[in-house]
Amino acid sequence: MIAIAIVVVLIIVAVVWLVRRGESPAAGKCDGVQCPGGSCDPATGLCVCGSGRCPAGWICADGSCLIPAQPVCPDGTTFDPSSGYCLIPANPTCPDGFNYNPATGNCLIPAHTACPDGAVYDPATGNCTMPAPSCPALPCVPPFTCDTTSGQCVAPSAGTCPGGVDMMSAQPHDSVQIINNTSEAPFHVFVEFANFNPGGGGAPTLAPPPTPWSIISGSPGVTISAPKSYYPATNYPPGATPPFFSPNAIGSATWQEIVMPQQGDTVLLSIPQFHPNQAWSIRPLKYYGAGGDVACNSSEGDCGMPILIEAGRDMVGDMSAVDGVNFLLCYQFTTRGGVSSLMDFKTNPCRATGQNPKGCRNPSVDGVFKASLVGTPACLPGGSEHCWLSAPCPAGTCNLDGTSRAWCDAINDGQCSNSSSTWDSSGQSGGGPKSCSDHNLFTTYCYSHNDAPSSPYIGAPYKLKLVYSDLA
Image (cartoon, rainbow, N blue to C red; front, top):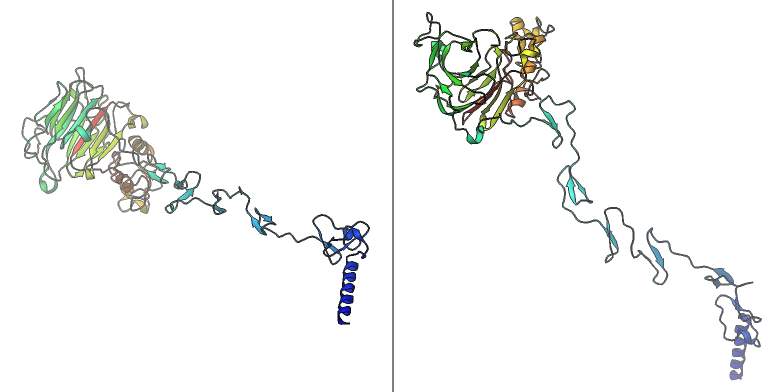
């Protein structure tokens, strides 16, 4: 009985299973057809889901057509259904400056050396670059110019005076080189040997050295005289010895005269061993008259007044146009540290002040100052003669007026300071005395108190080079 019951149960189960497939035990078209989630249509032998069939890619589940959910992948990747992962394409697009690494599947930036502070790495060149500097808000005072590399006002290089031999490489120490580029034939230059006029404590202003000036080398025909006394014959100072020559525009002192017969002549002089802290002078002099043999003594003809060099070892060695001018002068010399410096007096102040362009006197040796300053506390104590002390350029030229300003601007043309230059008490700003001297640049004295930017220092190996030319 039990066996019969088991067989009946199995038959019932089979019939139920066939019915659930949508087939009858007699429907042969659905034999072996499996329809997960749906049923087999006995008329066609096809699977149906509910009342119809599902679209391609969809599945039947409990009588309803469904499509599997698609995973969401990050931008730049796609879903791989075979692996179930989001994959990077074979050649992805990386941000600028990055490269794709197929071994790691990552976008990488090339390695580079860290740049110094203020610099920026440029991946296009592989270099560290500095942003372009900005120049000072205030314009640089000529001849200072803005350096686009540093963004600072800088001085021009000192340069060299033309002609003759190179001062730094070919000129011996303790020497003065003179070049005649004037039309004077002959050209006369006086070098000071002694000055017996009383100085401090009653001693001679310049005591005579053991030996006089002498020629090391020079063009044919160039000569130098023995020391000559240019003092009044009836009122000469103690120590001066006759014969006495009439004082002229070179001044009262004991001089040696150098005569250079032709334009282009050069001479190299040995500087005597003068007493320490005593300055000597070099002065060119014009001659006039039918034979060109009369020395200028005042303002005769085209005489003017000599452009001066006043110098000494380890002390100030300035170029001065305070009294007047008779020639242009390029003045090169060794200063502190043995480096070369230069002052190039190249613009005619006689033209700028409406005087004889071939030679003239300074219209105001002590300077004429702006009317707005004269009589004010800025010029006191002492009155208008102390206006040269006034800000913003004490001992400079910014407070000058009229012909004094025109005179100084012509003389200082192209030099490191002019009437546009102002400075604070330290003299640090452009055109100030310290900003000039820090670059071994100076100006020509143009009035009696123009000390600030016009006081260069003569240092070892004590070389001077003077190139004279005509006032143009």
